Image (cartoon, rainbow, N blue to C red; front, side, top):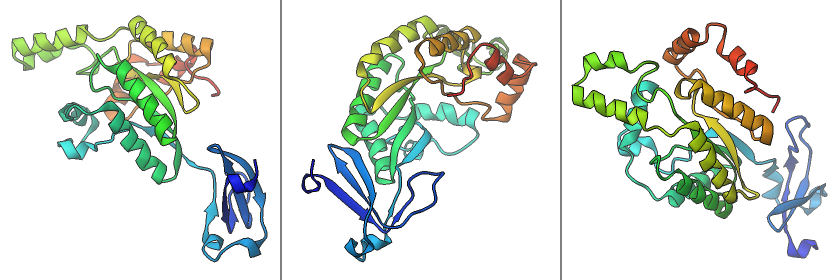
Length: 271
């Protein structure tokens, strides 16, 4: 393809990668949405505006939840994590596609070209439909998305046994919590659902395993994810020790060390 039919962007400065020193005038040739050439250019070919520009690889957002509507917009003000998470339930029902497309578009406009998307479901019943919508949004916006498929099957209300909470609650409300805890999607069901979601993958959308956090996932689920990741090579991403309460739980649950346990079951890898 000739330069006449491709997009050519020139700049007075280039940072090709983090391990290379900045260079002088360069141009990037883009065809069919891909960079096909990066080459030096004579300074005299640049306009005065181009001399002030910097070419560099797109930024990567290593952890994001793709919220098209910020929590403050629906009353979930910043606060300690354990009280903030229930406030997220105030979020009104949103169109899955528009929510993801809005979030990805903001990132793209900020120079982000790829994102690790830790998905928060609006409903446990709509996860598959939400994943399909995020897949379409990734393709339409042009941002590369690693979709972290959430595994959440333990401790939805407290870190540990729910029983001590009964003394502080109305009996009917406590039974409702127990029912909600018992109805959480188990690992086998979630793995099967994730397998269906592989149909949504494309060049800009791939799936990763996402045990939401060690305190929110059954030990058997962590082990199953470790085995699955070893078999198919998919990466694992999780929240880890975000608060002092989670650290206290981890120290009690895994006295020999949480990360040592992860390593022992094969959950850690060079990737």
